[in-house]
Amino acid sequence: MKLKLCSVAGAALLLSACATHADWLVTKASRADGVIALSYERNEFQRPDMNEQQAVQLAEQKCKNWGYKGAEPFGSQSTECLSRRGFGNCGTRRVTVEFQCIGMPGQQ
Image (cartoon, rainbow, N blue to C red; front, side):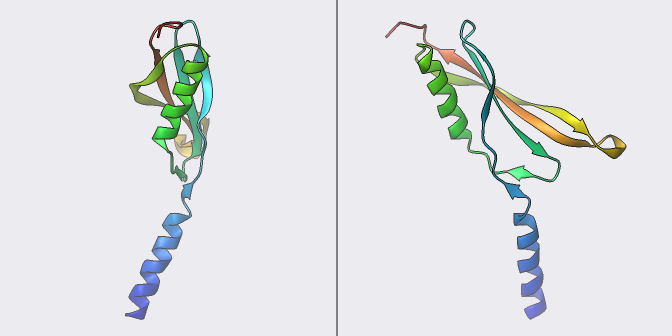
């Protein structure tokens, strides 16, 4: 029984080491087009605990600073390999989500 408990505890500890924190960063912004791209980077072993609501709030704030009413996600995300490791594996990835600003600037 103790061996089973130790095995479960060890596995949980090992898996929790893979979870990391990452922040959303603005990687592309066009006031004229009303488009914001937010990204984060991770390596092949990391599984960042990302807060999707934080991304929405960041995009909405940027759009509001430009005079728009708010922001909506386009609905998909893209992943780009930034560095390759041996055997074609991707070492570092950038995950990006794009948002469209809504409401014409200056309108209430």
